[in-house]
Length: 107
Image (tube, rainbow, N blue to C red; front, top):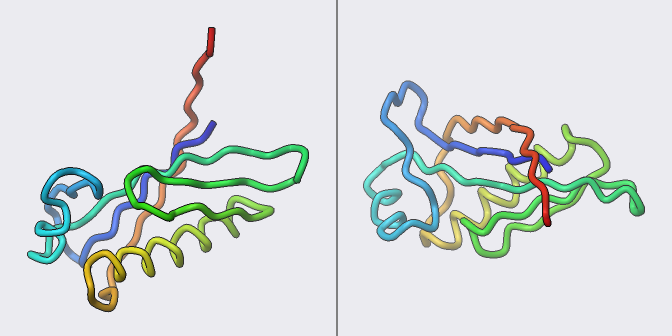
């Protein structure tokens, strides 16, 4: 499993980000705080696609054949969903998506 950490921040912003889904995140975002999302990525070998979803941002579920295409899908969907949640058009923000490998065992 991969975990993608997406951070949207204004260019030149050096503040720590506030995670979407936490109490008060919408207020923080409207005040200009950078917002971050955790996105979980799974490889569906049978369908031949990567699937990404986030419990931080309701409705964020996308799929693509490559990680690069998935990155584009995540960015587009997250921008639209954030605009919907915050009731305004997304700002032009620098977005950083980092993939981190997560290993876990289900017993």
